[in-house]
View 1: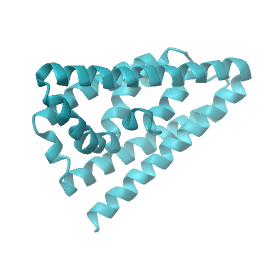
View 2 (view 1 turned 30 degrees about the vertical axis):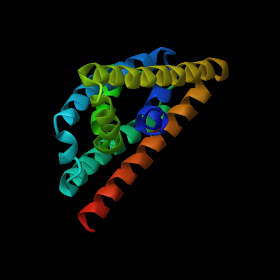
View 3 (view 1 turned 120 degrees about the horizontal axis):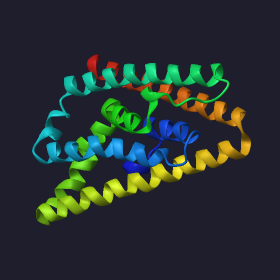
View 4 (view 1 turned 45 degrees about the vertical axis):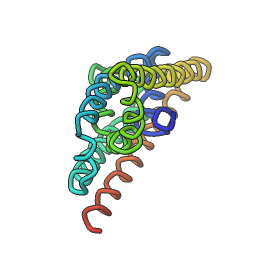
Length: 192
């Protein structure tokens, strides 16, 4: 649950997408799973060790930071310019789940450390243990993202467009903050 409920870019984007649809979290979870299941398999086969190399971590953090900055600025600006919060095709929740999972360096580092440790405990039970672990972990993501989007939608329908704009702007601001944090951490690694 430490990985599932930790506030981060996917949380912010799920809340933002939830202003348009209470079911957006379901699609974010599916997008996240599209990245997460293969990542679990790759870590099982040794990728986790590669993500511990400083130059690889710094590169992942830098690329993720730049991606989050662009996405955050776009989300922030769209919130204040729109007369209605739009979810255009480039912002579909499924795509958001995929892109933010790929662009979130802390997600990758979490899986290379904490996630790999948990996965190694599931390995004791063979392939069935790994598959059960993967399904249970993703199910937690699914439930949490659905709760976030449903709550955001309910708040948007009760409080209206102004509330939606504020939620979108706050989520955009959080993505910008996370982008700068990623870049700061990349700099610390490169110049340490």
